[in-house]
Image (cartoon, rainbow, N blue to C red):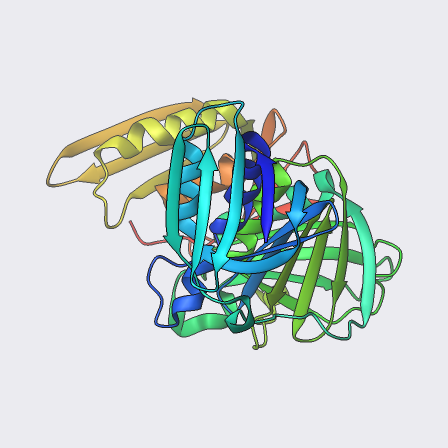
Length: 370
């Protein structure tokens, strides 16, 4: 195998795939990426056995073939080579490749392509398309609420499913038990009847990076156990979390009638200011509501006290409650509208948060004792 590739094209492609590769691996070949040259293209593949990314780029292929090379080392070398150069990658033997660019020459240890695992997607039950903007929105509005608690592995991802309402929607939901985010859109053609799937946190992160750099449409194929995303010349294949997502509808309050409306930016900045004195562990901020007035208060015996009063639109009963300031800010930072609406019940009940600039998104915050 011998190929020549423009440095910028190669760097971009390696950046897309190498993020999948773990820094430490008990299986040596998983530290490598597969380089396969044929025709006028080179395909780079990386996998950790749960997710794989394949990307094809144009190249001058002097000799077709395949080899695997150390992913992070190859990326670092290409990153440090000068802009605008041509890079030659040549398989010298099954255990060695040469990289040449101008007067630079590197020889790297390699492994045979025959040892590289194939995470083939197999039979898929559903296939549909959506725009990059639509998929990006569903990920960005929910991923902050993905749980990092490994014991509840079924919360370690975003739950995609079609709702069973009279007017079905494609929904994305994430929760860690402290906050919940749900976003919905019209069901794409071909997605009706799809199984509910949980997309793992790592896949979400790698997919989001690819969406950031693309403006093409996304073709999605899925089954009960795997999902495949096709974005231009890039294919992401991932296993799904094998678990049952909890009945999240039960924690979305429906009878909260104490409504407070306030400017999103004003509330965000105020919460950020008063939480400055909160301790890192609890970060509790107390909310006291009276007619048209919201008082934010943080009391930390170790560092001090902070209090701020805001004018809001609130006509219901006096109320005291509290939230984790970080969780509150996570939600507020997702909002698009100029105003946000909080719907309260009792002080110990979950609060429903609505973005007045995005009707397809809702958030739930669990209160904490303050």
